[in-house]
Every structure is written in C-alpha cells, then in structure tokens.
Length: 225
Length: 225
DNA sequence: GAGGCTATGTGACCCAGGTTACAGACCGTA
DNA sequence: TACGGTCTGTAACCTGGGTCACATAGCCTC
Image (tube, rainbow over all chains, first blue to last red; front, side, top):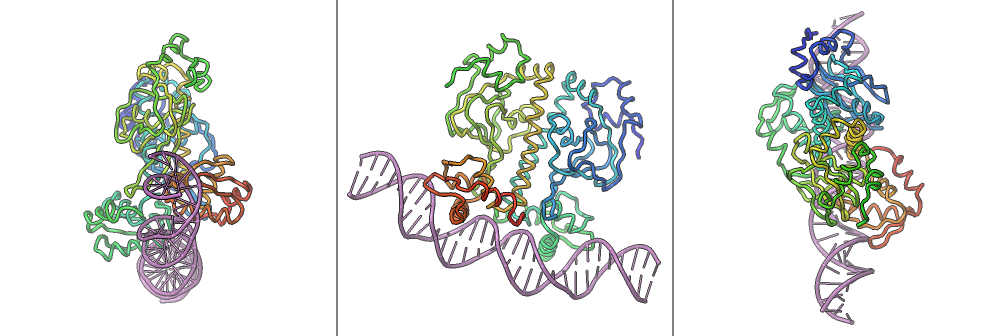
C-alpha cells in the first residue's frame, strides 16, 4: 500500500480542494479507508451504501450478468473516478442493477454522507466533478449500446485489444466476458487476427504486431453488422 | 397549448418548490418557454446548451444512429424528466453522442444557467432531483445494454409492445427503429405473434390479444440468445 | 377510379456468432 | 514424472437476424 498523503488524494481528486486541510487529514485516517482484495464482490444485489467511494488504488469493474452465465463489462472504475453506480444508489436510492468486482486489490476512501452532502452544497468545484462523473458515464454507456447493437464482434475485439497496450496478459475467456460473448468465438477471431499477422498469440499472452491493421479493422471494415 | 400555471409547473417538478413565487412566475413568462413542432431535431452534433431544459408537454426521443442508416432508441424524455443529455453537455461539457428528436409537439422551459446553478447550490431538493435524473438514466441504460446484448429480438419486441398499452398505433418501421433492428424482421416476428393469437395486426395498428402470453414470451422463453 | 404514396407480406439467401463436444497444451504440485 | 487444473484449438452444426428483391394492399388526391 503506498502511503496516503493529502497531496496524493488531491492529485487524484482536485475537486476535494475545497475541504479544509484538517478535514482532509481526518478523511485519510486509516479508519476511513477501505481495503479490498482482488476479486472481491463489491456489490451485487442491494447492499447499503455507506458513502461516496473514491478509488485511490486498483480498479473495479462493473458487470452485467446474463441468465445463461455469460457476462459483459459495463465499465471500469479507476483511481480518479468514483463508482457512481453506488453513489447513484446512494443518492437516487435506485437498487443496483449490476455487479461490481475488484479487478486488483483496491484501496478506497469512502466519503461519509454528511461530508458528501456538505461538499455538494457548498463547493461548486465538487459539484462539477460529480456531474462530470455522471455525464461521462452516460456518454460511455451510450457508446456501449451502439457498439453492442451495431458493431460486429471482430471490430469490438480489435478495439478492445488496441485499448490495452501492445502486450496483453489475459485469457480469451476474460476478453469474452468483457465483450459479452463466449470464449470459443474470441479464440476463433483471434486466430483470424493472427492469420493476418495482426497479432501473435501465446498462453495468456497476446502481442499486437500491427496496430494500424487492427485499427483499420476496428473502425472501418464493412462498417455495420 | 395548455395554459401554464405555476401550479402545473410545480406538479410536474416538485423540485422547483424552493424557488420564490416571484421567480417562478418570471420563469413562466412566454419568452422563457420553448415550443417545438413534432419531428424537430433538438440536438445532433454539438449544439450549444442554453440551460437546463424541463419538458412541460410532449416527448423527446434520444436516438443513436448507426452508420448504415439503422437507428435505435436510447431513451425517451417525458414531462417531469429533463433531457439530461443536454444538461450533461451543459455541465460536463461532453459533446453530444446521440441525437434528440421531438416525437410530438413539445413545450419546454429552459432554466437559465444562473438559475440552475443557484438551485443546485442552495436547494437540497433540487439537487436530489437532478441526481435522480442521472442515476435513473444510468440504470436505464444499463438495462438497455443487457437487453441488446443478451436478449432475442422477439422478447424485446414483446416487451416493447406490452409497454405500449393494448392498442398500438405505429408502423413496423418505427418499432424496428426503437429496437435497433429493421422493418422486415419486425414484420416477420409480428406475423409470428399473430399466428399464435397473441396480437392482431392492421395497417399502423396492433392490438394485443393475449397479454399473459406475450408476457411469458417476453421474460421467459429459453431466456438468452 | 387512376395513379402514386406509404405500409406491409414474404420468400430466397447469407452470415455472424453461439453451441457442443472434443483434443491438446501448458503449468503447477505431489 | 504423473496427474489434475486451467487455457486454447478446432470442427460440425444450428439459428437468429439481416439483406435483397419483390408483390400487395390500403389510403389519399386529383
């Protein structure tokens, strides 16, 4: 665990600049922090929200699971974000409609509700920050709907790979889960990519050989499904 | 145009109760209202936002268009809602990622930005209202992703019909656009429904004959695609 | 009541992607 | 080094849904 300084917190969340220094140090007391191991289930059905979570370390994925066991990634929450699905539950009292899991060990700071309310009421910058979170998420989800509804899986897979750097350490199953598909199909498509010299494959290991080629496939290629 | 009273405004938007009566009447002056005909394009690429729109009459649909000409409904905005896609642009400065069209003639009140900011800062109830809008929309979009990713079109169509009352006045094309599909498929599916006695069909006219049957199809029926 | 528009019916065909059912392959640990 | 677990390859097959290319059928207007 990296030591948690006020500086680091403010670097991740400039929106907290409006808090008094004393309040900030209070927030960072070890009791206010939450540590979760990798692979933990953060919320599933309708667990209570204790406050407004700020991710300091690690990442969380929010996932929709289908009846048949397939699942699909809705979005990730990384440091600097907040898991607004839980805050939306917090504020909107909407029951969770998705599942949240930690992808790696996660450290987060949970802003107590009174602090959250106070910031929201008094701090224009904080308000803007929270609105950004919401509106970015909405935009993201709208993109996702479009992807799923109108794009072929090979394009989506290509895009996914491109967004992951040149050396990817993952399983086909994990990629499938991210796309809402199944392993066999991802394997099949990857084999196709490999045959065209776009990637090279190994166990839990994909290397992108031709970014431009993949890119062409991703956003062009007979367009729509 | 129904006469716009303060009462009516407050009935639709109780969150505005925090405004002084004088302010409310000011808001309702004819200059602050916007009237749009049916079928108007509200926003498409990145038109500027003048404020926070409150729908008083009519409805707006927010739609994602695919390259190939197909389109799909993301959500509707009805009286009592606000078109938070535009407010999200307003607040988050995110460029629009979808298109908005009026479905019928629309009357809306556009809260000027200063009024909006003031309410947000001072009025807890208004803040809650806005958060609800966001979080409900997010939940809705997450549902939509699931639908598109995991459910067969016949189920989605069935659900759509059920949500529309027993006598539906629309074209197959419109239904297809709502589902992100094409006319032929909707026709084919409807024919199937009719063959099973679930609906009866006429030109721009669908009558639901067996709600329970349709319902069974909608949320059961071999589940996933 | 003829012509033209819009909405529907429909069949032939195709293809992306899912399902099933395996066979290897790599990797750890006893 | 044998064994069990996790990953990957892959082939046969099926099917939902999209595309194309029409044929009708209501409906409105002149």
